[in-house]
Length: 134
Image (cartoon, rainbow, N blue to C red; front, top):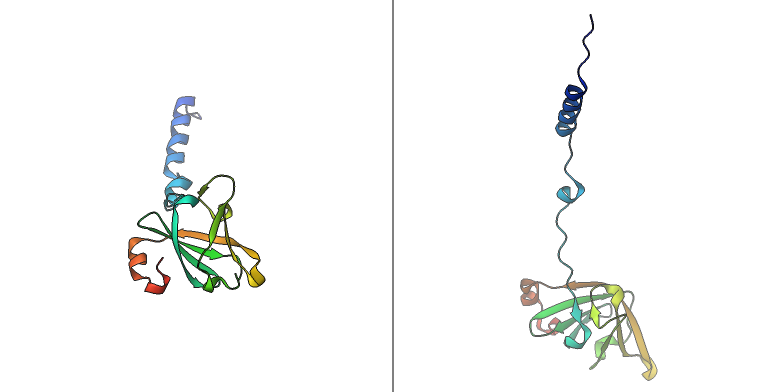
């Protein structure tokens, strides 16, 4: 004689099997993303050129952001003034939100697109050489 399990017993067995083989959700398996850090272009108070592809900017009193440019921005190292143009709103939250504007060769304005934007930690700011500290 064959014994067939009841529907409730079969459902319970399937639930136990599913729990035993359960994988953590994708949110649990990935490390937490750092919170997006935004700033207003109006709060940029100073800058320091690292090289023709990298500029550090001071935002407010204590924050420093590193802007890695998409390509070479010629003559940037001799600048006494730059501008940061924001796209969309005055807040810059990603590299796509900002364009660095500086005087270029022959007195023309040059636009340097931002490839990467990163807020530096207090330890990174303290470790910057004085010429790279805005």
